[in-house]
Image (cartoon, rainbow, N blue to C red; front, top):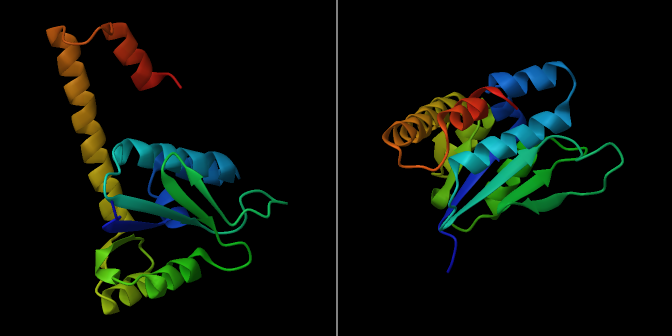
Length: 166
C-alpha cells in the first residue's frame, strides 16, 4: 500500500509553539523538547494510515552522534547536522515526485513560499498548534464524559492524575 500524503514538519519551529516544549528549550533541554514534540505528534497522528510523517530537526541527534535519520513509532526523523533543517525540507520537496501530496508544517516564510511554488499544501506552525489543542481538548472531554457515564474501567481519580501528574 503506497503512502499518499507526506507531512513534513519543521521540528524546531513547531517546538516553540508548545509552551511546555518552549520551556524545555529555554532551559537548554533540547533532547527533552524533541522527545516531547514526538510524543505530542504521536497523540495527534495515532493512526498514520496512508500518511508518512517526517520531522526535521536542526543539528545532530546528540553531540557526538552520526545519526542522520531514524524511525520512531512510525515517524521518520531527520537531523540536519551542519546544515539547516530548512535545507532538508526544501531538498525533500525537490526529491518528491508529487509535491502536491506533501503538507509542510512551518512558519518559516522561505519554506512556505517554496512549498507554494511547488503546489505543496502548507500549514503554519501556529495553525497546527491550534488544531492540536482543539483535538486534545476534544479527546479529554470525550474521556471525561465516558468516565462520568461509567463507560471506561478507569476511575475519575485516574483521569485527573493523568491530567496533572507527569
